[in-house]
Picture 1 (cartoon, helix red, strand yellow):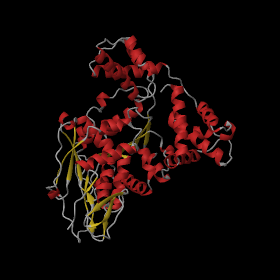
Picture 2 (cartoon, rainbow, N blue to C red):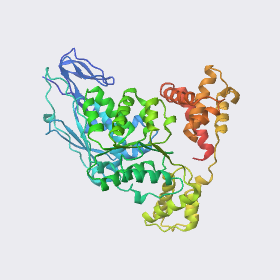
Picture 3 (cartoon, rainbow, N blue to C red):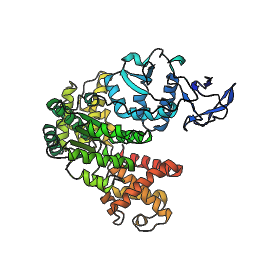
Picture 4 (tube, rainbow, N blue to C red):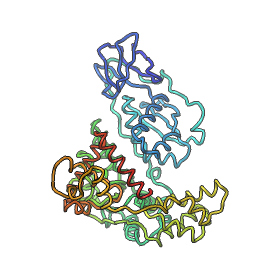
Amino acid sequence: MPVNPSIGSLNCLFATDKKSVLSVGGQAATCTESAPLYIGQEGLFKRGYFLSLQLDADLWGLVKSNIKNRNKDNKLIENWLDPILYVETNANSTIPRMILGVPTPLHQYFVIENLLEKIYLEVSDLYRLPYEIDVTVTGPRATEGVIPVVQQSSLPELTETTPPIKQTIPTPARPSEFLNPEYTFSTFVVGRNTEFAHAASYNVARNPGQGYNPLFICGPVGMGKTHLLHAVGHQILSTFPQLRINYVSAERFLNECVSAIRRQEMEKFRQKYREKCDILLVDDVQYIGKGEATQEEFFHMLNTFIEKRKQVILASDRMPKDILHLEDRNRSRLEWGLIADISMPDLETRVAILRYKAERLILRVSEDVVNYIARISKRSIRELEGNLKKVKMYSELQGLAIDLDLAKRVLSTHETQTNISLEDIQKLVADHYKVRISDLKSTTRAKQIVVPRQVTMYLIKKHLDKPLVEIGRAFGGKDHTTVMNALERVEFLQRRDLNIKNDIDELTTRIHNITGL
């Protein structure tokens, strides 16, 4: 008979065979009927016994804790994760469904788009039976009260002959569930920096599969790429309701592909993206270069769409030639259609955007305040809107009218911002590592020079977002492949070498001190 001991506050199911000793994170449990059992990361199916934590509130608490620990520097994730509460587990269906509650539809949208993959990965490490997750809006009460816990009787029985059950790929949600209702063509403010991208997107939405295929929208973070993707989706749904649309981030595509390979369900995966989809919207394509198997599937998927005249629209914060580890055949495919570049809007466009945002917020703002916010918000549309909301919130909390003095007081840190150049970062790193700038630009392969050189390239890309070719040129004419390898190497070293991570953290702090950001 299986026994149900307690590990800390976590309940677990396990077989009583003394030979079935596994490692799941190095946490031991003693049972009166078996040898010590270890709960952790490795496969939980051995000798015909299936071991798993229960799909309950305790498990959800551990999942939240693990996600926070893996994203300690990302307060945004923590802020959106905290209000999510376990509601119940519906075990009446063939596959148990864990219900998570969030307070608002906006919260639900953010969780599905940005956190659901992380949640699936963490739950899968702890719960090794098939399961599904639903994120539902429960209102403000989702953050208070006692949360019901699934009963032991609702969990599957353990037997010596029960093999692991394969988890199927979740049924795709309706397109409208993944499209932000605020992101339409009518709410997109067109400026000189977005005229071409907007026109191309609108043309594709009115005539999908007939012209620019694929359409590749490229630009820095927070410039409206995702807005255009969603706008295309809304327009196509309105004009061609019979067409099937799939909106997905590259990271989610990658995770689904890896999961399908692991569970030997590639046929279902291919049907979802090749056969059961007419319009494919892919965001953050820069992450598609992470895996070889994913690139293989991505390549064949693009070929299928283009051959069948199905429309593909992609968005990325860098050009195809600058995407790390992207295979040449995929790079060629991405460049096959039309590339629409979005740059930072000029002052006139920023003013127009602010006026529109203020109108949407039912906010009366004078011209001098609008011009001031537009002048200091130079990094992205997201920053522009964020600064307007800061002023609005401060005004409401303090009961003060919005004027220029108030705006300057709230946004005073922006006035002290100082631009930093590529050469400034080179000098900063050279001083930190006690090497010469000429050494950074040299061809020497000595470790004491190579690491500082790679760190410098990484910081320049991160803080200035310079093209790879331009970065290579600043280091003695090195090609973009060398720069790509340097960026990837530093990302790897940060995870493995605490000294490198500390160096980068310290240098990043110095850069922030200089720029005031």
